[in-house]
Image (cartoon, rainbow, N blue to C red; front, side, top):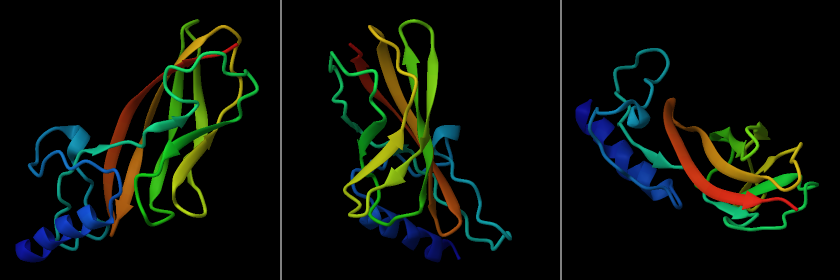
Length: 151
C-alpha cells in the first residue's frame, strides 16, 4: 500500500501547472491533505500548494474601475472541476470582500472569480485560498497575490 501511495505524488506533480511542491512530510496544517472517504487505507501525501497568481487586474495596478466584476488568475491545474475556493479582498478602508467561487475557463488557461462592491480610492490586497481535490484527497492552497487600487 505504501508503494502505491508513493506513486500518487509524481502523478499529481505531472498534472499540476504552476503548482509548487513544498514538502512531503506530515508537518504543518497548511500542507496536510485530508484522508480519502471510506478509510480505504491509502494515506494522502502531504503537499503545500501555491494558489493561482493574480493576472487581472495586475498586482500594483492603479486606477482600476470600481465596476470591475471579475478577477482573473493563472490556472493551477489542468483538469477542470477539481479546484474549489475563492478570493478575499482586504481594503485599505477596513472593508473585506469575498469573491464568488473560483471557476476555470473553458480552455483551462485561467481561473476567474466574480467580485462586487469595490469602493473608490481604495487599495485592495488580494488573497486566494481553497482546495485541489485529487482522488478523494483534498490539498489546501493559498496565496497572497498583491494589491491594486481603484479609481
